[in-house]
Image 1: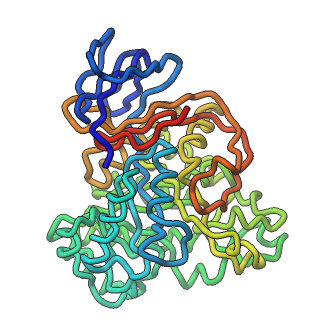
Image 2 (image 1 turned 90 degrees about the vertical axis):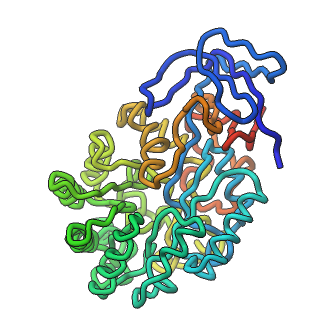
Length: 427
């Protein structure tokens, strides 16, 4: 167990979107708590950190990762993946329930908490299964899972084709004010598709996933949200047409939030050219006009959150022909660098971009994180915004399935403090 941090971070650029703060200041952490932010602070006995030229940010909150433990198809361990998170400035992680065994009972939730605590790098916020075994047939014990520590409920990418079962789940969740996370993808329309149903898929001879595989599911789920009043969050929106539905829902006053993966903001369907399996993800990378619409939706707040969609896979997962490979990109190592790359390119304003990976996901998950709040346990990171190449030897996730290896991106994390403990410190 690391000791409580006692640090004086001097003359960093302190950025906290939740407080509207952007200033050069000192940050004092005493006994693990963020004590003060101000000019020329003094703290005898504190470890001094010269942060001139560096940024002090709230610890990032990644709302969508796939856990590699207790088990399942993902590679690595909770220790390896939370270490990668800490090195990327991420302090809190929303973990999906499609583990093996499925996170539909309190014992699995407790195991996840214990493994993360033992590793000591980042806090995992488990999401419980919405239905038993994610099979879409019977309600999971949501209230028991909530008492065990689950922050939200989802069927991950598994279909709930029976609308009555789904409605009963939402009614139950609404009764206990439990948030539900939708991953909108109509299974019958998705089929075995692995690419956006467009010109590139046709050219490569790949089975396509049409936009309406997402919009049909979004429309149905929004109708059930209206009928039940459940607090709802939509994961991994990929299409411009879905944004119109979400905006309409908000205008009607529905309690709805949504996120997008960082990859859908940077890449489009052309990334699959040459049968590049490193860019095989679900939902698929779509047309560039969808990408542009997603960026605009992040900027105006229609999409509250940007997530890594972290899915760490072993090298063997990419050896088959593209349609037979497992979808997913390892994203913890690059979430912050890619975000800063978007800002650098002028595609997102800095304050909104940082809010989308700090305070906004914390709000969606109902957690007191993602902000620099004096008096509370410190969760922050110290970042060098200068560009650097991401070499393979520095890649910390056990999943190396990323198109961003050996590219030059801004943002190196020098220090991470998670809930009062130093969890990452680099030269």
